[in-house]
Image (cartoon, rainbow, N blue to C red; front, side):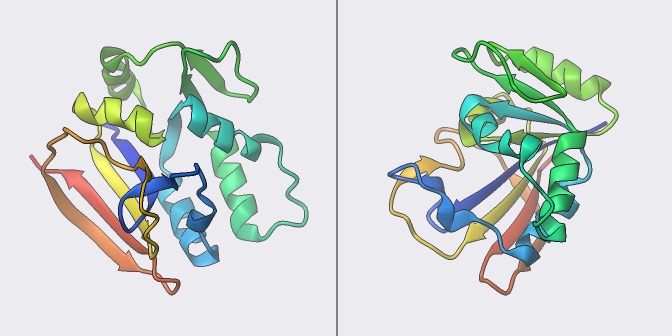
Amino acid sequence: MPKLVYTAITSLDGYTADADGGFDWSAPDAEVHAHVNDAERAIGTYLYGRRMYEVMRAWESMPLDDEPEVIRDYAAIWRAADKIVYSSTLDAVSTKKTVLEHEFDADAVRALKAAAHADLGIGGPTLAAHAIRAGLVDEYNLYVCPIIVGGGLPGLPSNANVRLTLLESRTFGNGVVFSRYAVAS
């Protein structure tokens, strides 16, 4: 059965965005980006909250002619995948292969997983928190940056208790540490 995979790039203290909403400190270098690309190749459908979608939709139309291969590769991966955006405030989506849902329904996501032919990725910590608390996330791909930002948007929810098994870890040249975990059975 396909997995629901939560991928996040966080600070060492666990934030995906700092107290001012900034996340420029999390931009992956070419080595980390290539690893992200390889991990994302298995994703057939992305599930996004509004804020994550608003960041990610730039991949739909960004000019790629002068971009490095790692950027062109990710754009192709992202454009090929289906997307579902969960938002009570958006009226419409502006990218291809994208469906808008006005509320997160855990049972509908379970059915989506059961019917899927490829893994699903969930992006954005606010939406992911709903899926984590509902027991829907099967795997966690966490990229931890060597920075402490002191506050902001947490990458993982409070009041969730999930036992994990480490599947893989890697340290990159820029100090980013990748850890891949599966939910322990």
